[in-house]
Image: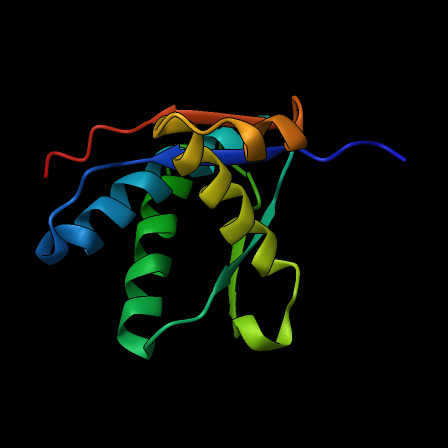
Length: 122
């Protein structure tokens, strides 16, 4: 079995009223990283319809920066019907704990986590 890779973009701290801006910046940085690893489809946990549309608009904009003809799709799915989405919460929690000085959880994940900071302008 080939090990997975978890790519985490970290845009923090973010004031509550600027969370959507930070999310957009993180998605903007994440898409090219995923593309570099030959990922062409992403599943994102669904939120309110208008917020889902914002995610899609962001990804459409980023997709324009990828090489011509690149296929990259996004689909929103409810978290309660796709348990694999829970993994992103686990990995994000491990990265957050590491940044706060607790490496227990990131150590369990080994070398399958690639995390990087995003300047969100918030």
